[in-house]
Image (cartoon, rainbow, N blue to C red):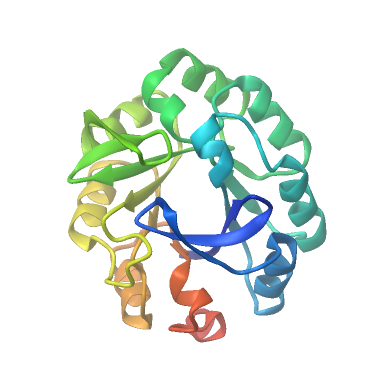
Length: 234
């Protein structure tokens, strides 16, 4: 299982939101320095989110993302506001390993298919679930698509990787939604990356037992609740 320290970028800073609420954030300094810190602690991959882009639908922090790619030299996946093929090309051109589509994958099937056609192994889709339904627009709206149904539709369209986040768990340090993660992992053949609520070594061990492809860890690393070195040893 691949561990992805999360770096959420807003207004040029590394931040953590609580349940995706833009009015509840903790600031942790420079994103590039944070990327270097996680590499120094042994990270083999990073998960970046352009929070400004997630709301605006444009790539707001491309230069910062490029700096992190150049300074860390490890695989990086990026999400947040990627809604045009131009944005996908731009991220691929600066060395991003995986581009994560969110709202656009749900609302624009033609764009999804074009992105997958151009980058079959580099496109992932973020399924951000609220009460079992996929959320959109930086988690501010909830669709009528059930998360599992959406995952299966994505697989039918050639998507190879998904990131599953339970919004109610994100930033709460209360543990992931293991039942839903396992349910999705059992019903699709894609790489499933779990996100949201991971707060202990036991959480990571349980996700590993569920045989998910990867796990994104955010607030627990920033607060020191768990240490990356400790996770890597396990």
